[in-house]
Image 1 (cartoon, rainbow, N blue to C red):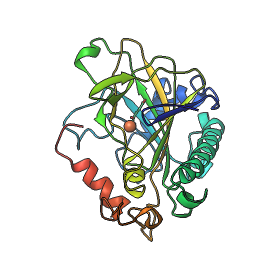
Image 2 (image 1 turned 90 degrees about the vertical axis):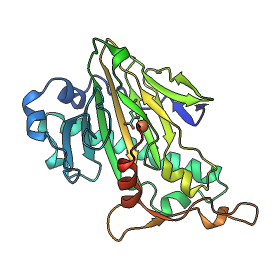
Image 3 (image 1 turned 45 degrees about the vertical axis):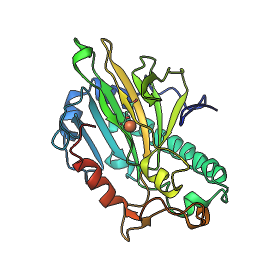
Length: 260
Ligand SMILES: O=C(O)CCC(=O)C(=O)O
Ligand SMILES: [Fe+2]
């Protein structure tokens, strides 16, 4: 595994870019029509520029989101088997990364899992259509992820950029590889030892696909408060922030008035 800023890569995930899950977002118009919704309680949904009504800008992309807890019967039949396989694989990779990240914090391997950072899982596929004037558009405006961890597989187009020393640095796609990045909530529980990176996606004249596993922590009731892990705190390392509920954090995140 190598590291670019806090973005990590590895060469193990299967190639997903020619799968039926992807065909769904690029081709199956009738199925997409059925799934079209902005209701976040829907366990599988399709929409364009997903935060259109919260954000100041419209993004150049379509998105399918699937709760990883979904009953396979709720998935469109055209891509059911492959989607179940991706959920399983991205889930396992997320779990393995949470063990490594716990150890990197000097904690037992199961610590982050024991506080359910690996829960609240969503599988997302973004499709960035070919853009005739990419210099006038943005695929995803600059942001940090409001999750614990994000694990991403992409095609060979490129376009993901990380802000490093005030400069946008392109993340070069590796065929069959994956990118993982730390989200805001992991920065909070690690008491700022891990940093949540600012990143964005720029569109191009050719289409791009990415498939992402988001791990947002425990969102189901009873709600869990997340704050700096007690074992990491000392007189020299006092808590850098208060405890938060995932739901409140996400609401605040989407209500930010500054351009993301
Ligand atoms: O599509 C990508 O490469 C990244 C998308 C992203 O940053 C996000 O959905 O949070
Ligand atoms: Fe992101």
